Length: 330
Image (cartoon, rainbow, N blue to C red; front, side):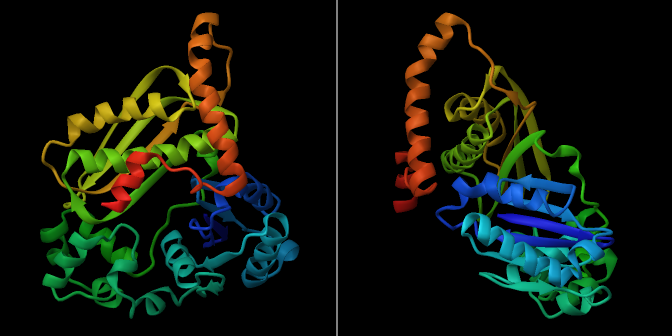
């Protein structure tokens, strides 16, 4: 899990290793621990959330002290180890958390952001994938320090309006606040791909894996989703986004995947994408189904519930759809 904290201008990232086999089952317990440390939490995905620690010095001590305390609290409550990173922006917090893996604590002091990032490869910046790295390499830009001082006109020519944002990110500048307004209003997951992918079947399989993870989280929290949104980003950083409403709210993979796949088929017509993501919104509690519809749904829901019990007990990798296994083995 990736969870961020903030005090004044200091969002701190706390990362619970997503690869930990027990994480999915302990996700809700981790969030309960974080809720006790700050009233302002922005959970941006199942494994990432920011905490705002502004004004909590007397309660939690310094940011480093708060980080140590949070690590201890999460371990005591769940048995999981977490890595804690922090800085004056979400970008710095994110990079710091990656640098502190697998079980560390790293706080970047205010004023040191640009110097701390300078020697690091541009690939550490969230959203800078293989295509962007190659474009930057062609410009002679390999490190964050080089990107931070790159001529704006060069970046504009190669990246359009996104160019100056890349330079700002390389300096650790990101004024996005910790925003709790979307908490529990949506759930989502996205991934940046190692190589741009144009094959619709491969994109569809990746989408299925993302939806499998998000719907499992929905069911753990007793929620249903009405709206399904798909996000794609191509090699030029152009973003495609569409959403569709389900006939009735659901927490199951099959109807949500079917809705998202229709959007994907319309978008994946030869274009290569570097990022794919899905989010579920219009969340609500379970509702009573009409009698005949409930009877038809009973068998599918029973299978889903049995699979969830196995994941709860043995971890989220205990059961994997054959389609996803086939892809991993190919």
